[in-house]
Amino acid sequence: MANIVAIVGRPNVGKSTLFNRLVGMRKAIVDETAGVTRDRHYGKCEWNGKDFSVIDTGGYTINSDDTFEMEIRRQVELAVDEADIILFVVDVMGGITDYDAAIAEMLRKSKKKVFLVTNKVDNNDRIYFSAEFYALGLGDPYNISSASGFGTGDLLDAVIESLPKEESPVEELDIPKVAIVGRPNVGKSSLTNALLGEERNIVTPISGTTRDSIHTRYNKFGQDFFLIDTAGLRKKGKVHEDIEFYSVMRSIRTIEESDVCVLMLDASQGIEAQDLNIFNLIVRNKKGVVVVVNKWDLVAKENNTMKEYTDNLKKRIAPFTDVPIIFTSVVNKQRVFDVIQQISVVYENRKRRIPTARLNEFFLPIIEDTPPPANKGKYIKIKFVTQLPTQTPSFAFFANLPQYVREPYKRFLENKLRENYDFKGVPIQIYIREK
Ligand code: GDP
Ligand code: GDP
Image (cartoon, rainbow, N blue to C red; front, side):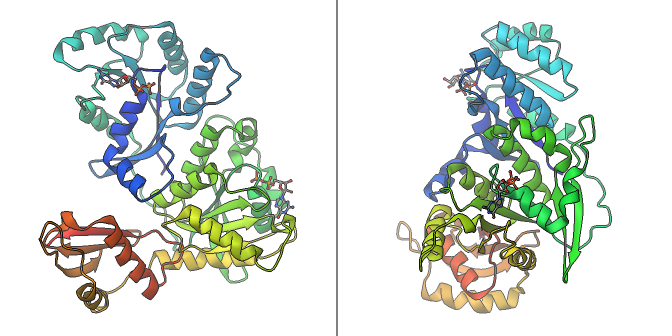
């Protein structure tokens, strides 16, 4: 179940500061040292063992020709359409401005769960100013200071509380749930149709706001999986398709519901920031990934074209490059079946469990040979490693001084793991813990 929380509000009220606090600034810095291109307006928030996606709507320009007011309106409209919960941020010292009132009116009309957040409550005196905001008709304001973190815990408690309860799993079949994602026009519908048949495309959108995606089963030629299809929303989607904000929301929802994502690229165009953003969404959600470079028929080929494309792509998605890359032409039905096969390979890889004894037999000699570099004259010893019982492969290495084990060493461990076991297409988490 995907849960998307959107932050809306006029400029300068503190949306991006709140966003950074929710997704954890420390994490952002870690990402940067890893050289990962990030989307600074999308992240995941974890609180008391639950998590949800957060979007800072202010970070997305929707249509630069619009007036300022139209721009804000559209952001709020999209947030209302696509998010499950809305955090409406106002500046406690700024009073109710016309923009605030206009946004509040839109939010009241929507039937969405809205939290009114009075920000910049940096000291107790400022709490009194928040009473004024009852006039917005959105209930109790949550007093917070995004700058200091005051009040954000209570806000998060309330947000988590209002998330839909985990439904009891409906006879979960052990077959992959697959999402096809990518920028507009890369060939997602064409691939879907090639797999499921043209008639899939004439599913009439269910009126109302239902966003339940359709799972269509593909069970042919010895392959079996569910394709997560948001066809019910696609018609409406066409209107906004080119808006990055919109396609990010759409991607998040499908990615979160899936086990394996097929990321489609258009070979006739360069690899763009948006492609990498979607790749990172998949990785951050710890889903399996198969990269499909489509429209290969449009590319003038020489001996090395495929290798050059692959090398360049790997440079862009580094450090996680251990992914299947398939060059397709969906219109010519070229290598479509390879895609299907790789989906099940990645799905199996993601479920791989390595017994603790074998893991230690494998790793301890490697660590003995190449231990973590000493830090401040202290030697770091790793004595034991085990795979954690999580849905996606994650490994805990127990050390005397876990805080001194740096990112490059973790990557070294991950690479060793990948050399020896097949984790192609699967993000791996490496944790160093106190023994
Ligand atoms: P956005 O345009 O809504 O994303 O707002 P920003 O997050 O960029 O913040 C606008 C300004 O308000 C910046 O100068 C922030 O440092 C400041 N700000 C954000 N949160 C707080 C807060 O809780 N207290 C105070 N005093 N300033 C804040
Ligand atoms: P979507 O927006 O990602 O769902 O993309 P579509 O499936 O609607 O495809 C966009 C356009 O690309 C359509 O005109 C397709 O016919 C075309 N297209 C899709 N796959 C291929 C391909 O392999 N080669 C070529 N040349 N065109 C393709």
